[in-house]
Image (cartoon, rainbow, N blue to C red; front, side, top):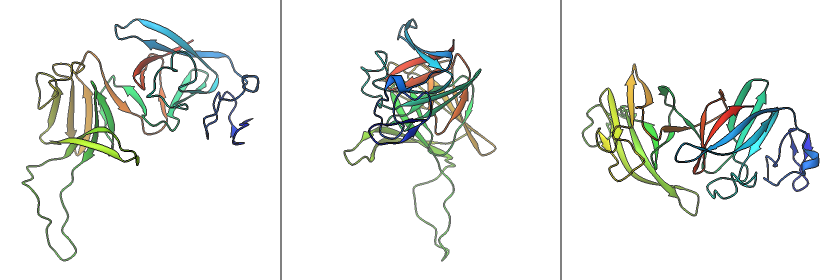
Length: 247
């Protein structure tokens, strides 16, 4: 283990930054295993813009990790944790403010409170379940409920007290709801990063799903916990897109 000189926390071998306070660890105290992979920056035109090496063991990446990351103010100093064991890659949000987003390649089941990035829109999914009667049998009054099973809420940002600022909400009803810029049930006509038809929310046997509809810029889901990934996976970190590649 590598002890942080600032807070004293014991960090796993391979850590470049303290997992507790974010202070950089001295390079001479950071043992490295074999080179196993790379985080390759993907420019808006699809070309590669440089690569950051990933080594056997635990890799921690954030603002301050190198020139690919330092100019992005949406990155936390400790943002992404990537653990590599042989050919196995496991990623985890290292406690960042803005999250680690995975580009969807197939239909993905949604969990309560899931946050996704579609174009420049940051949205949160919340299920809507039938209201329950109060213990005395009284039913809570509300607007007509034509079978809504969920809602999408725009996340505008955070207030100074840390609370999330919410914008417009969109109820989800029927078997499927399509998001797009020109066609669909929910339109973001002013967002040039949203495709004509971009993504679809659907429900089957009471389980909600999200699928990208071959959009130009992709649909991204914020990972809530660690997740195994394969080389070729695209990750959205801050305002930049990276492809995780094997060495």
